[in-house]
Image (cartoon, rainbow, N blue to C red):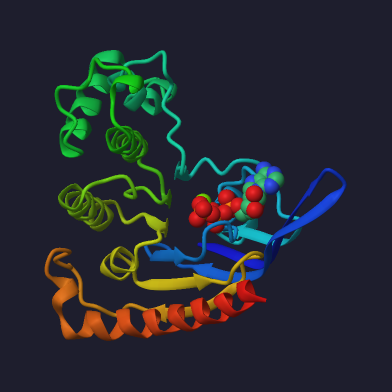
Length: 260
Ligand SMILES: Nc1ncnc2c1ncn2[C@@H]1O[C@H](COP(=O)(O)OP(=O)(O)OP(=O)(O)O)[C@@H](O)[C@H]1O
Ligand SMILES: [Mg+2]
């Protein structure tokens, strides 16, 4: 469904170049769930911005269903790393925004927005403004807004980073349930390896900047998965430890570089 061909991105700023993404070739099948991990600042958010069609690649191509994308891809629901709720709208009207743009009448869009807000545990906050919510609550409102739009592709940039452990598990369960139902293609950026292995079909590890594919591991754990229990299985631990061993090697090599 999505194909990255020798993708590269270099920013030009103050007469100097910063290469952020280097020669990435990857394919994402329809209804696949891929987790991306990599050191902070390596280029993960930049890669998502290119897949969403918000940044143009400096080299290589992105194909969507075999065609090159020019401009923003409207099949994409993008939950960016920074929340981008509109401060002058209530949470209900923020979440209902995609339906408003699609021309859904107010009563219906509010009903649907209320129902999805309940699923992300934000009932009672419909009439608040984003400045009155905590960071984790704002993230959940963004998740609700994106899910209401029912996009074919979900790009999720550290969506659960600000949540406590219980709420994070609840959001994992919600995401997997909606994914089984609506069969989206999901690309999730996370720094949490347990989250990556619990949810995804495949984990891709990027190198330090410029991001290139350093390591890949299929996660062939049975579905549907019990996100609370799967981490205690032997199969999970084997996969987790294989990736962890790689990350340790990468860390040791980086430490040597920093020490120089
Ligand atoms: N619009 C931009 N213009 C110039 N440089 C940028 C721009 N966006 C990102 N960068 C630079 O590109 C590099 C990669 O940034 P990016 O946000 O993609 O990293 P990341 O892997 O998502 O990091 P993190 O895990 O901390 O979110 C950084 O050095 C950043 O300063
Ligand atoms: Mg980022």
